[in-house]
Picture 1 (cartoon, rainbow, N blue to C red):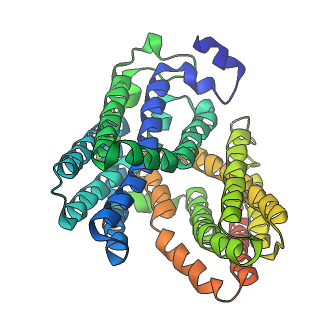
Picture 2: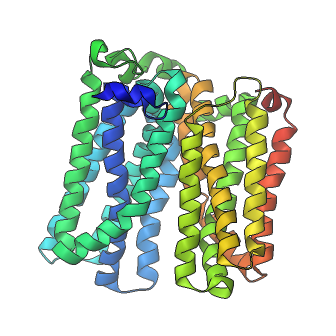
Length: 420
């Protein structure tokens, strides 16, 4: 039945059984992640009420992940990203199962939430780099772009439907049963991904890899490639990887805070309130999905990639910087959709080109830096947006666009990136 996927370039990686299993497990984990965040927020509000406690619990969950992200990437290089996903999701299943039992027994206290959030944050530090570095292990190089588009599309889908599903589950079956369902989802993820390790070569599919050795890690390569510091030196020594990381960091910093914080302020001040914010974010999300789809159908050949990446990033900066000047919901949505499309495209191509260029022994550490740029800078981006909101929407979004444009100028100054 999967033969028909060959007719669609975006779906072609699904012909490989190893990728299908990793993708199915990762998609389920992403959905569970999004739902868990909402349910945890509701639980903290139920236990402690609104206020400082909510922010502190979420911070406890985020800090270990950011602090240990580079170590998690090294572990993926040292053993195998598939095995890291198996054990990290098994650990998540155990922790959410414990939380479910505590909630059902009506004995939950705030310290339980701090402890479990901290342990889950530690597991996230291993899970997220592995979720990106596993893709080159289970598809051929020519299928990396559509495979990454599928994975990032699943993440977008989880972000769209996860909050609503979580709220509905809590309303119908309660918090205890909902956390129990998350435990089962993480356990299922662990089992499904584990099955990819034993996919024999004859069942790997036309776009799969050569079987178990591709998902069993590269111990000799990782053993000879040093640790975290050597990974950082490796990124710094490669001018293309180094500059793509700079561009990715600038893009992440400029996007998350202005879109969420600035978008909310813009909707409240000029576009008509909460309903307009929903429309604005939906337009951005829809554009991002369109960008993901476009990226899967083909990328420029070697020698033009750097120029195309810089051009699309420049377009993203212009769209983002213009949102603050929109006078109505229609124009703001068009600009948000354009920014989302450019960002969705760049998210796939940057990750794909980093995966292609990085040596196998360093893929996990390179991907851990990508995740660090995508996650660790969120608080700084929120603060940046919050500070500039007081100066007006035009200043906020123009400043965010300027960050992107300055990064493009820096990238254009690199001869290696222009020739990439």
